[in-house]
Image (cartoon, rainbow, N blue to C red; front, side):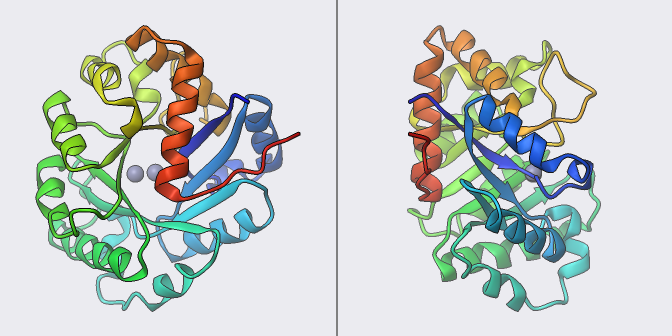
Length: 261
Ligand SMILES: [Zn+2]
Ligand SMILES: [Zn+2]
């Protein structure tokens, strides 16, 4: 059966407070049967676990977004270590560097990123990495991980050369709404050339809404739009994209979907 997995989203976001159930049902209706979230701090990581407990085929990563790194640098990460034991927690993330917004001092972003990588190794969970205008730095820091540690570069925004470097290292990439934007030629090139077995699809909802819904709130049910764009850019069947990207997410997060009869 054909289905999709949204490999990175934020269903805890307060923009879903009024209609979260309906949004999830719409995802199912659009064949997006699996949803993997990512936490940005302690509160969102906790909220996501609670949410995943109440919905089928929904999992989460727990982590500290680089935007929040400044607030956490002096805390120990015991809460994160505890949350990581929950059976619906399938990765550590978000973690990484965001030099676009620079909401946290860069040195603190680096320190928190380092600690989260070490934690991912300690608890043996994959790493979900956020890098914005910081790809080179993130790639250097990622060398601290053991070579075989699973890494997902979510919303990958590097060029084709960096994509090849990522693939050589065995990393996964996920792509979202950006590849539907007319001007995003570089991201489209990556979508056309990345090996399918390294590729996942994500909405990063409520952010990064694909064309033609730009400006509206994003939601996991829009994954098929992104899949269609990948299929078009590569000149392959939509079904091939759905199967390969869902399989990549299942492998990376080690999840098993309950499928309808
Ligand atoms: Zn992110
Ligand atoms: Zn995100």
